[in-house]
Length: 277
Image (cartoon, rainbow, N blue to C red):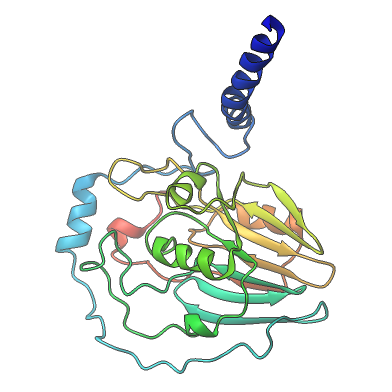
């Protein structure tokens, strides 16, 4: 009986301490710059102050935003695409359906009416998604570049889980938010970490950006881009990023992409948007 109690307590200890120890070991050996609490860029820049954020958001002049833009919605030509071609359809913002190697991949899927922590206030969409949610093919993989509201849309991620039960790929420390919402099939990735998904490889690569869901959690989860590669194609999805020397390193390490999805914009006002030299 004594031996049975010893075995029980050893088993109990392993169940509760091993995952935490594994997390601690992993966070000690990551490639992304990390100080134990916050991540940083390969080419760090000074963080914006709250006063600068408020000044930019509420007092800067800006172009008038259209109330509505008509958009023609499309449908995928095939439910799946074989290994000798690649199909893609822009949906909106950084949301893209990519079909290759028999897999259907969604990037930073946004379908909600607003990109905001609240459904009743915040930036509102002014055009329909390029594909209706109901017209999506079965989704196998969802890649999420970072946790800003215009890239991580929790209600839609929960709907994707319910409809297709895909695997979600995020940066380090990004799984907790999804787990809290009942999304358990989540894989966290470090910069330059490469995963084999059958005939397709997925690599998480650096980006010049940041992360936050609120005022006090800036830089606490890792951001980045994704590089999809197979024997037939190389595709680079940058998420959100400024310019940096990592672009050259991505090409040198993983090869010249056949297709790239890059963010363009956010250059004004210069006092706020420019990168420090």
